[in-house]
Every structure is written in C-alpha cells, then in structure tokens.
Image (cartoon, helix red, strand yellow):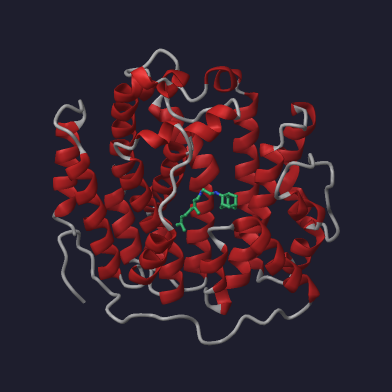
Length: 368
Ligand code: RWZ
C-alpha cells in the first residue's frame, strides 16, 4: 500500500486484464437480457460484461430495470395522467413474472426493454433475495423522484432553478443508481463495507457523471425543449439559456461552461476516495472507467465553442486509451492529473472563474 495525502491506500498496483471465464447465459431469458443490454446501454455494456459472475447479473438486471423506468419517464407521447402512476408503481411490477408494456411511442429507442420486460423479470427472480431487495428499493425511490419532478410545475416551466435543485435532480436520476450500485458491490464483498455508511462518496461518483452529461448535452436538450443547466449559474451570463447559441454571446457561454465545470470539479476529491475503497478489480474497472471518461469530457467541453452547436464527444482512440489506463488506481490518478492540467491551461485569465478554477486545480493536484 502507498500512503497518500487523502489517506488513500493505493491498492491497485497489479494490472488487471480481464475476467478469464467467459460469460455463458444459463437460459434463454439470460441470453435475452444480454441482448437487451447491448441494445440499450451503449456505454455501460462493456464494463458490465467484464464484471465477475457474482456481480454481473445483479448489475445487469438493475440497469435494465432502471432503463425501463427511464424510458417511461422520457416518453413525451405518454400523458402525465398515465405516466405518473406508472412511475409511482413501477417497483410493484417486480413482484410479477410476466409484466410487459408496449404503449411507448415508436421513437423511444429503448422501448424494447419494456416490450420484453418479462425476460428481465425472469432473471430478476433468480437473483439472491438480498440483491432483489436492493434493486426493488432503488426502483421505488427513483420512480417517486421522477414523479415528483413531473408534478412540480415550477420545474417544468422554468427548468432547474437553484444549484440545490440541480443537485437534487441529479440525485434522483444518478445518485440513486450509484446508491444501488454501491450496495450491490458491498453485498458481493467487492468493496469496503464503509462505503455503505459514506453514501456521500457514492453521491459524488454519480453527480460527476450526471453533471458532465448535462453540460455536454446543452444543444440536444435545448432542441428537445428542455434544459438541466441551473438558472442560478447560467442566469449570471445570459437572460435566456438559448442566447448562448448566438455567436455574439459566445464568450458569456464559455464563461458559463467554466462555472459549470468548476461546480462539477467539486465532486472529484470524493470520487478518488470512493475508488480507493473498491477491492475487486472488475468492480474497480466498472466504477473507474465512466469517471475517467467524465473528466476527459469536462476537459473537452471546457472553452469549446462547439458545445453550443452539438454534443461534444471525446475521440474513439482517446476512449480506448482511457479504458486501458484506468485499470489501476495509479493510472486513474494520472488521468485525472492530466485532464485537470488541460483544464487549468485552457482557462484564460479573462474568464471570471479563472481564480477559482486555478485554486480548485491546485487543491486537487496535491492528491494526484
Ligand atoms: C457506480 C457508484 C451510473 C456510481 C450514474 C455511478 C450515471 C447517468 C446515466 C452511478 C440505466 C444508468 C443507463 C440509469 C438509464 N447516470 N443514467 C457508482 C451512475 C441507469 C440506464 C444509465 C439511466 C442511465
């Protein structure tokens, strides 16, 4: 173990390559679930497939159940009279063996998860009761949270108002995913049990991912008629959020992105502590890979005018390199160190957030 300023013991000195035992579906329902996961999860499927057996099916089922819930929430063809009761009662479907739903609009790309939900249920019922309970509890809470935000008129009319609302929204759509993931990791004995008593660490894992997506997705969300950027921040730089699309407001927009990135960097310290407490290699990869992609994405959107034109993505080659380097704790620290420097160096002195960004990068540097 290496002593570290955070009190972190850098436990990952050996490079883990991949699980050696192949994933073999035990029955047709499991095979169908793997197919559904491939269709629906894009970024998560690879890391889920590499998880050790004990954790793989629970995490797969968990993400498919949440994907189903997410598809209902996202579906603008469902009226709120139909949608809200479905979200509130979704966890009850986990008691059934044959519940399916084909009422989603044809444009919902993940509607197939709902159409074939009986396959997910079939695998869900084969999981250890402890895992089933974790999945059911989180599904109930997330359904309630989603329903609450729909019923909250202010939220629908004005978007996310304060930074507190922003954090709360992120808690419902990501923090709870993190909470369930952590509880499953600890139940499988792949993580330090203290993670369950320090959910604030999990919250930072989830918020760093969610806030990064929200910053990156400005244009797409605006075109869909919604926004998750908190007014408390963007209101300092524009009267309307759509103003950032106009070339004359480019500087204001970039300054706003700086402040949003600075806000997201507030999660980094706790993310590094969390990762130091994951003991299994496959679970470490599962947790670390999305985080290194997030910090790379934050560096990419920072000072980048393209944010106002499209969703900025990191290059495929960069992604591959990140996945390779994120297999050790030291590798993860190096990646964070690199992208924090990129952000620091990109920041012009004329940016109103320059001083705070310098301070934040300097503060984090001592941990890296
Ligand atoms: C692993 C401790 C994955 C925290 C947050 C990470 C990501 C944005 C994506 C928590 C199923 C995951 C695909 C819910 C629909 N939130 N959310 C630790 C984490 C669930 C699918 C993906 C959404 C979506």
